[in-house]
Image (cartoon, rainbow, N blue to C red; front, side, top):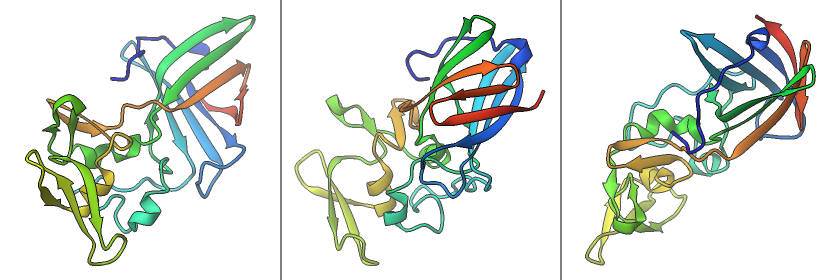
Length: 212
């Protein structure tokens, strides 16, 4: 759980689905955005979905590049996935006259969670943990079909690792500790929205109430 997460309660009159668009580019094929303000079992949860396409299927291989069917040069330019439900962190609701202000952030690389959870977590001394058993990556024939990838081992030599892991095992994509690996906990994309009746906006985001 990212630092700063605390229980919160969404105002009951705002719970539901809000849809709209974002201005500017997130590198996606659609500017659509959906905000789900959910209240269930006495707890509140907020999720953000970008675009209109379906999300990539969950990863099934720890050693193949994810999302499936993409080349590394494409994956290296990706952060947000269309259709993936990003969980809001560091959520704060503040009354603002008759309106409500909502601030939160998401981990833009959180879509790699299913791939990261297939990984083994390796301790790297004072560098924490990672999903390859070493550091200082070396790439031979980079970007070619015969690419080979290596990490420095504990005795100063090199150990070959699957190139998908060499490219994706970093703290942008995965967070690893002594218990295992999961999607990144680095909340790096913030939102600041003002809700007024059936509309909400803030920065590049513009929303209207879609459903209760």
